[in-house]
Image 1 (cartoon, rainbow, N blue to C red):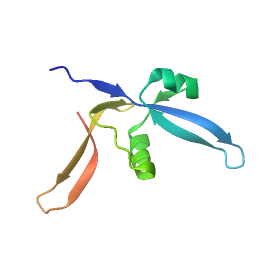
Image 2 (image 1 turned 135 degrees about the vertical axis):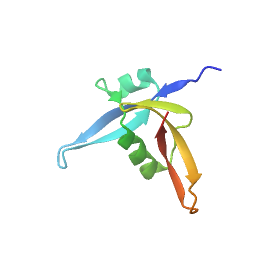
Image 3 (image 1 turned 180 degrees about the horizontal axis):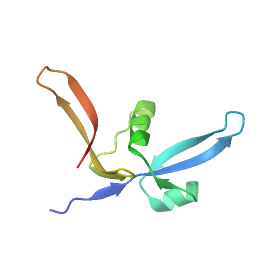
Length: 89
């Protein structure tokens, strides 16, 4: 069975000069990314974690970001502590 890898793109839009910041979103379609931000790029692992913190959405399956290919993992260690994170595949 072939593993499908989904590219995750970061798109900046709505620049705010008073704070020198951009609003941004993550998308999986390069066509959509190009429409939002002609200078779009692969998201970073940090972008994925910020996205989860902001809206709670988790990209499932194997995702490709600037640092490589990752998948979402949730697990308990031997002491019973719960962990959730993207792990390198």
